[in-house]
Length: 306
Image (cartoon, rainbow, N blue to C red):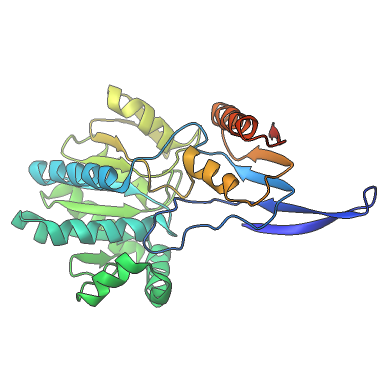
């Protein structure tokens, strides 16, 4: 989030413009929740999920466990396309907890593979920032647990090792969870996993972040559950793997979180400009903001980016 003054010569006053950036969910144990600014005359606000509410943590964790249980039963791999910063670390935190709670011995042997050198480096940075983790995360540390450095966690560095890992998991019946970039399957190492595994019903693909229109991730998300196909690197691949989507791990705040961010500003902005969302999401959020403003006697002009 960033802000800066703009001199308005006509009024002889200073106008403060605040850019929200990607707000993220407010309940991440590894990052402090975003604080609303003390003042924003004009708020430029993301609206990626302006038309929906994310699942709560217990629900999303239960769905994550269900997807992995399916892989364990089928001797398959759960492939999670995820960007290297933020979402990867949140997933590792949740996976460590699921393994810690598990009574099934198969969970104790489940390999969690981070196949992204960038994600591995940022995970190290997150470990260095332990003083900024919240109380829940510190309680785990106090009990001798290591949410981002547990025994089942493996990282893949070199490209040669990456290709060997893809081949090994595709050929064998070794259940595993692979987190690899990019988050929208538009490039990066995750594409090689998808090319080898999408056509095999033993495997599952789990989307945990926003999939933009026109990306392979959106195509898989949309057509996979209906037995469709996707084109990767010029190759048509029929989708037989299980396709799942979990909300709440996204870097983008849900509608209720966006509204809470606005409501947390001591004096409502005079103008809110909604960006970074598809038309339906922007319009839905605009309606919610205008309804709240009218109910609370706030004069707020809401506009949507073209």
